[in-house]
Length: 346
Length: 266
Image 1 (cartoon, rainbow over the protein chains, first blue to last red):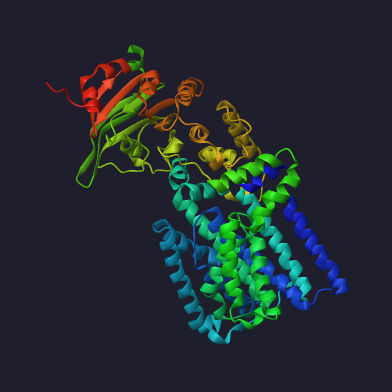
Image 2 (cartoon, each protein chain N blue to C red; image 1 turned 90 degrees about the vertical axis):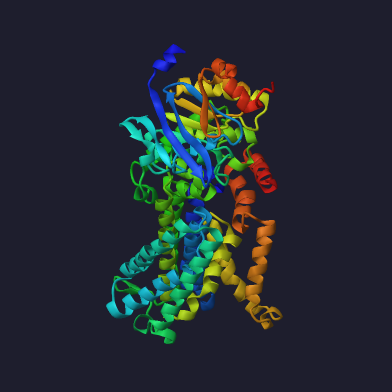
């Protein structure tokens, strides 16, 4: 909704933003300004962004919930580890398959969503997610259970991405592609059908939106995204362990999307950055670091504060109050403020 | 009167029955809506009007009966179609409690209304393949024209939820016009409107009927509106038809007076 005024500037802000970031990393490649742990932090932001985009497609655009998505991301990671260790396939093929196989299984979630709504859907998908994690623990032939599974950084046409900065550039390029596809998707017949379904199932059906088709599509697409994110996770961390794919990760997805901004591309990225940076900052702060699970407390607190004071999410609020007025000029600035206030009253 | 009876029925409801548990909401109801007129369905609260609408538009499954619709492909029984398929035949509806897409802008609401008309597929959309842009632009242009027609030009980028009640009602109407329907079913279009808004609506509905060549079938409580714009009316009570005819005939009918006001004590 908030993006529709920038039609004359379609996705320039995302492309420019990503390119500036990539340029920064390219310069850093020569100068080595960032510590390597900072680079690793950036990599985490990038793959979590893809994950959050996938979850946002589900929750923000289509209005469906899943608390089992961590298992789909885990599946993507394990598939990548398996294909790369035992099959030795090409990176791009592995990446694609790690998205496509969870996508097919994501349809199962869609079938559940056709029969259940809201809280019940959350509970059912939670159960599926926990089952997934159990399978990762027990199916040793595929996952090596609690020993975890190691793999190497990817290689494209003989070029190995062993340098973290190179890998970060690769991951960012994939993120940019995902952003563009998501943007195109959200501003199209299909994207509008998903949002219509979210806002009113009755009205959307009477206008020709098949709930069967679009619920399955929403779950399939978002499973594809988290599968890709899982694949990048595996390549980035070079180690996959079943403890990663628990409920905590699914709840992190929820927190990212709510804190950053629902139904928003920028919001997904801001939310991902927020959840990656909070544990780092707490760990580096003398007093906070001593409290166990401080990052969970802060995440929860942030969620409450955002819901109470910035219901549009951090990114969307900044977007509406600062970015959009700047892009469009002063003329429409006034009514945008009014709209926002009216909406908050209602 | 005579010419209207001659025109072909576009929608024929035949012996429709619906029960909820032990309650018979609609009881062997039959009537037919001639093409190209404004047709009214009236009745006291709980008479089963919205239930009839919900059966025609496939939200409810009737216990028995037929809903015959004169579509491009000849006469079809709407009951053979699913709820999201009837728009393709040309049947569109609005809702008693406005069902706008509140988190979308005004123009997005209208463009979502064009879902059944806009034929782009998933891959065209995500890769912006040739043909996508032209079709999307065409839909947007159509939406702007309809907004203009409704007197809502300039509101296109505002959130739908921030619009006043009367405008939201109009938007719901505009949204189904995007689907280029043959017949529109309006569930209490004037509910909650003041007199001047109702008058504007009456003119607008006449205009829609004439300019878009759409048959209008409405359920309404506002009797002055119904008597003003409907050419034919069916009155029902307790799910049964009690009277059918022109507004004058309905007003003269004792059965209708009885249903609304009660029986005269002797």
